[in-house]
Length: 620
Image (cartoon, one colour):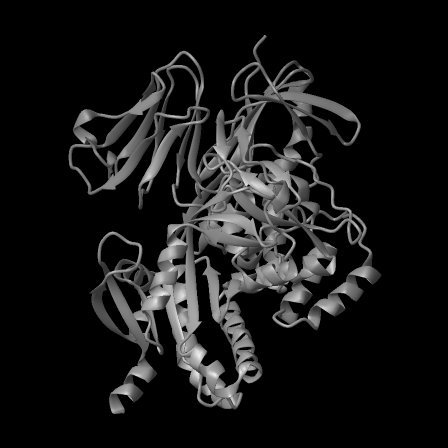
């Protein structure tokens, strides 16, 4: 006997944005934990894309169900379907819908219950609590936000025990460290004491900074110092560049494998420092024994780069209303090829729907709307996805830009604090990993040989050695780090080219006054070159170092410097100004062409002189 489906829903209007509501409700792993649902265990099924989930309701009643992938459109709705193997319910399909309102957002939580037998027509009411609890979760969030909680997202009432004496002793030491913001230390204590376990395991520094409304670099520094002090442990996650989910974890860079496999995507990847190796932090077990449990296996925020995900049965169509602002990539999970770019286009009077069909391992669209850039989706038109195959397909529309709150190894290993605090964190001997982009600053002293001749070795060495600290402080303040010194020269690394150029210009602007303060006369004259591009990371002389053409060109650019200036390629300068436009106002730019040693043809270069120096030199 087939029983009729029963719907239960609750909705409420809240004074918060749709994006804010999505951020707290689409993290279903945390939501389920916070409202008191039990942890779950997942195993693979023979049916592709589906999983068997088991748990114990109320800690004693065993439950097992077949779980389908979540369907969602970001900041609009999500649903999940669960088919039970036994018990009074045959199926539950529940989720959240968000509707913009003039004064905030309308949140609707719902669940559709399909009874398995007559008792299910009565006992389904026992399962209504998650719907009501999801609405109350929003109430609790606003209450916590109103009283100024650094982490307003609600947490479970029961948490694991914290060694408060040890915590406060180590936090007291942390507050005294240079470069650590005491206000952030107080927020860190609150999270360790009051946060849920998932907020303390595999923590992303930049995500925490965004939640706190704090400077990202300051929070990363805080966690690095906290780790060195014994409050946290660092972990290197191997991230699948396609589904962007951790696939393996190591405790040290020296343990990184050369390759790793993603079972979901069916692809073997090389480890690289830009996207595939990411730093995360977990609270030290001596401070708090946080349990790494799973409360939901398919949370939409587990893959925040996915704008929409749809589970399509054989020959099923699904119509999506999307406000497309940038190109998205349409792919089928588990298919290595066959991606299709969906590109926003102006409105078209005769196009109300654009169909993308999956067949023969790839997505295709109407020939009339397909260009070399991808499938055009006119504004106002719906995207209809069709599965033309005999099997189920999980279609995802994803943002191709990399995850904004990730902390890739290439970025953290360029930070001076990391190199100071974790100097032993190096790659295994002989291992080489690609870094797709890093910015380098090469510095040297003009006339250093004459300096040694004029004032003697000891006095000259003292001045040179002191200037290393000047460079170190300037580079660290701009978010970079010193890789190595070479005689009187220094090689520095930055994650961003605009930070590198900003640091170089600031050094030239300040070095004269620094020399006066240090009573160095005649003042030291810096020669600086900046370059950016791909490098190879490897361990040399016991430290993490970089090699390759980008390094060689950066050194040649430094040699082009006359002193008081910064030299870089014209293309690199244009990229730096595009990233941070005020850089173009900081310096006078002279464009010229020169032959760099070892390169086959002449290069277009830019010589920058900080505005204050250019003015004083013109006066002279």
